[in-house]
Image (cartoon, rainbow, N blue to C red):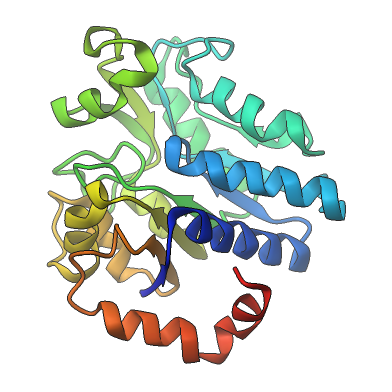
Length: 265
């Protein structure tokens, strides 16, 4: 795992967007794992801008989202399918047939989960998995005590997650109590993981995820096991990292990041 600290949320999102652009430019058939939420809105808006300015081509890539609420129709404004359609898919030239999310209204949810895993395998696995992190330390909806080898399945949401997502629904009472999510093991199978976190409210959990012990209570700690995981945070989210100065040194000095330093990302 490597941690990259940028001065503010916009710079952190810009770096993540540029990393996605680099991967997609190198491999037009990229299989891209996607996340949702407020943190990702800036990343998607930057990808749309780059697509319009440079003709970045999404036509051959495929996408798989981490999760979807159980019970919400794809056209429900609160569903993640609707979120992705509005913020990215309809704004770039991706083929809608190659955009995948779990079906939260499937009559057999367990079968839908198995089919989702099979679809990822059919596409050759995920090349780059974009991730956020919840205040409970989850990636996807892998709530506390999620097995580190878990696969796509239905999970009950914790009160912390329900409260965090309540603004999207108007109140906590309206938040679905279950969601379908890629498992921790599914995420770790991606060839590269890229996690973005911003804001002081994420500082505590980022420190636990990056520098704390690996535990099923905080599913993001499993990313420490991944051979190629990059965590991008802003100064606020880096506020409790013990190794912050070392992580800053990496971005300023390692050759891998020279092109991004030159571009001001």
